[in-house]
Image 1 (cartoon, rainbow, N blue to C red):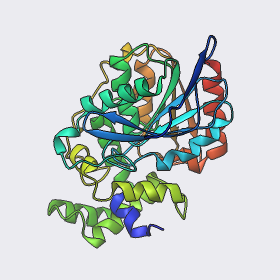
Image 2 (tube, rainbow, N blue to C red):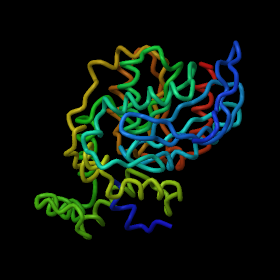
Image 3 (cartoon, one colour):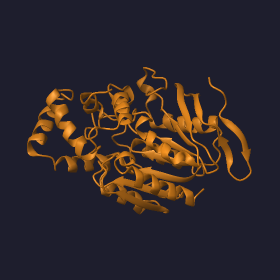
Length: 317
């Protein structure tokens, strides 16, 4: 079991899977694990569940968190395959020591490589947090690939997200803010007192459950010391120093014509204006907010969350 301290520090060939395609539903995926060769190494994939409904391809956050914390999306697998994979650099996938690999373009290629390897010709796409940014990039380059899309707890750009976390941070107790400011001015992001203060932010805006779900703890362990997160993000959610810090597709998301469901938790670290911006620019967007949630609605409001996503996807099967 991963201890609470780890969470605070983090928060930062098998057999073929395809059965013959049917005329109406496209390829049917057999449940099971498989490794796929992508640029830079191999990634682990896992198809959960089955049924005749359109498969759902899941893009996890982090970057570098792995699929673990999204395992609850397996609730959707009663009548459709749900496809998880660990992006390169984390989880059960290869972890090459090569910072040059950790670029948005390579991750977009990775998603398309996984799609082709699994034979996904008709599928829905789910992206959470950084996975939402990756989904946006993928859709801009492959506009007809996915039938419907869930952009969960995400934004159209990193600057708006960081501005929102800074605003949320200003709502924390003055002493917590003082500790954060003190250590950040010195670049001491691993000091115990600093990590305790970061933990206050996460308990309010990342996940409000106590204890955290075991699957979330596994993702926290994936991120701890992770080269992908350090290269692309930085020390934590509100200190972004990596190559994602200027990522912004606000002007381009209007090109995404897929039906989109936007989800967020009421206390999400992605503030409401992030969702507002996406809704204003996406031509076919609807939204849902979950009242008991921060960033982990798939656990904090699990039943309502799954019901909402299942209903949305069913409209576009």
